[in-house]
Amino acid sequence: MVGNGATDWSIDVTPAYLPSAFNFNLMSYDQHKIFEENNCVWYFNDFIPHKNAPICETTYAKFEQQTSHINWYDVYRTFYSGGLSASKSNRVGTTKVGNEERTYKRGYTQAEYTPFVKSIQKQYHQLLGDAVSDYMNRPDVRKAMHIPDKVQTWASCGGIEYHEQTEGSLWIYRVLQNKYRILFYSGDTDGAVPTYGSRVWINKLNWPIKSTYQPYFDDQQQVAGYKEERDGMDFVTVHGVGHMAPQWKRKDVTNMITSWLHQEKF
Image (cartoon, rainbow, N blue to C red; front, side):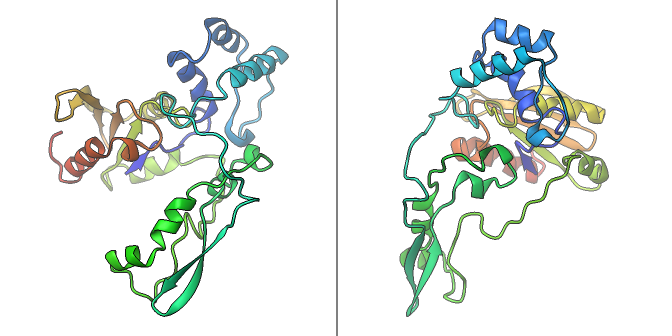
């Protein structure tokens, strides 16, 4: 089960973001026309070499400036800026575990959270998730979660070592087809890994459609998203939320995932 996962670098991230931004009305018709007529395209971390015409670069720079206050991960949700710089904050917290005082790392920066994104390494980094670190390491929270004293303190995304693959992860779906049940879901207001791009690479798999694209509904009989069953994978969208769909539509996503796990209709 994968949610809003970057899968095919030939379409995911920026290639899919540009047409999605146009559909979200974040881009003017003239900008869209320039991108289309001049074959303007940018690939994540330059995995696929491509040289754009000068007009592409100038138009994209203007587009980026116009959308600088858009939440790229959820284009209709609040954009948060500023905050405490990681370089000026106390990155080390302390807590009591049993009779021992221990330290833990407070929060993370964007560069720490996504070290594989080259473009952010030299940017200003605010501290993110420090309140979560403080909460998860409180003695009463550890006790409520029945965490033994022998277990280490909690840290955000600790110990993950990333490596890059130019082929993305598209290949694994073909390996796993009909060996495991697969669910790919997509929050449809994500700009970072847009639903549009996911639909493109899913179509590239050319797997037969068993159940056509159709809506599913929430408790108030409002459209919660759309679903499609293919030979080897189920594709589900979550309407009105972006990259972190389970965070912002907890009930709908929980119902969808629970139903899918138990092979029930939803």
